[in-house]
Length: 374
Image 1 (cartoon, helix red, strand yellow):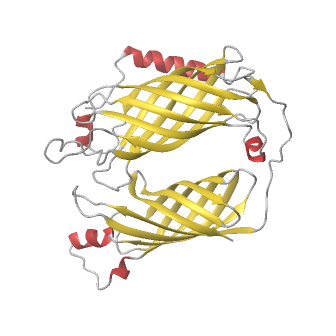
Image 2: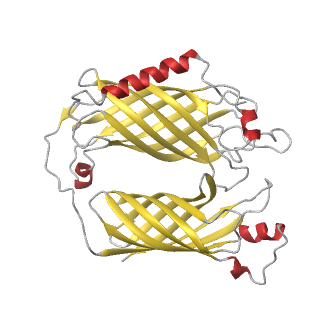
Image 3: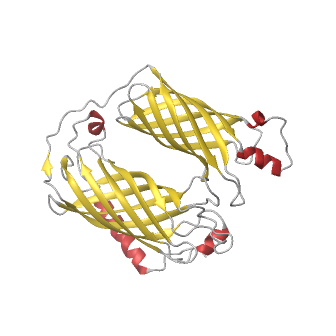
C-alpha cells in the first residue's frame, strides 16, 4: 500500500523543517568562515518512495525513522576552490534507518563523505545543499526461497547517495540547530539482481556542537574565474560487471571508451560535449531472449553522443552527463542514458573514474576506470 501522511509526527517534523528553512530568506546569518571541527546528531523521519512496481509497494508497511551522526570540518578557506564556493563544509556521515518491515527489508546503514554547499552567494550561514556519496549496507537481502518478495535489494553492500536541503541556525558560536529535507538512494548498480534500490525521503532535525575552537577567519578575496577558450580533452576507459534478471545468474562484463571535450567556464563549472563507445555483453543475453542472435559479439557495440556538466572542487569533480544512442541493436533500455559519479584529476594528466550509468531511474552498471587529460 502507498504511504500517506496520517501520522501527526510527520506533519510536526515537516512543519518545523519548512518553518526554519523559511527563516533563511530573512535572517542575516553568521560568518561562515568559522573554522573548526563539529559533531552533529540528527533524527530523520520519512517514507520509502513507491517509485517502481506494485510488488515494491507491498513491502512498504509504514513510515521510516532514522538516525545520523556527522563529523563536519569547516576549513579556513585557504584554497581558491574553497573560496569560489564560499567556503563549503566537508564531512563524513554515519546513517541508519529502520525500514519498518524487519522480515523483508530490515534496516539500512550507510557511511559517506559529503560537502555542504552554500546556496547564497555570500560568506553567510543559512541554506545549504548537501551532496554525499559512499557505501550502504543492507543486512536483509533477496533470497529466492526465504525472501523472494524483496525485489529491491539484491546484495548486502550497496552504493549510497544523499542529496539534502539543510538550514543551520546558530544558538552560539559553538552550537547550532539544523533542519532539512532530503533524498537518500541505496542500490548496487545492477552488480547483483534484483536492483530496484530504495529511495528514502526524510525530514531531519538535529544539533551540532563545535569540539574545537570555533575561530573566525578573515575574509579573503578569491578569484572566481578561470575561464578559458582552450578545450580540455579527456579520454576515459572504464569496465564493470552486471547481472540481468532473473537473480542468481551470470555476471556480464562491460567496457566503455569515452571522450569529452570540456570548456572551462570558471573555477567551479565546466561544460562539454563527447561520445561513448559501449561494449556490454549483457545485451547479447537480452537479445537472445528475444530470439535475436548476432553473427559476431562486436555487433553489440553501442555508440552514443552526450552533453556533460562537471562541478569542480579542486582536483575532484562531480560529472553529470546525458547522452543518446546513435547506434544500438539493443533498444530495451530506450535511446537516452545518463551518467553520474566522481572523478579525480591526479597530477597534470591522470584521471581516476567512478561513475554509474543509468537509463533514467534504472541503474545499468557501475563504471570503474582511468583516463588521460590532454
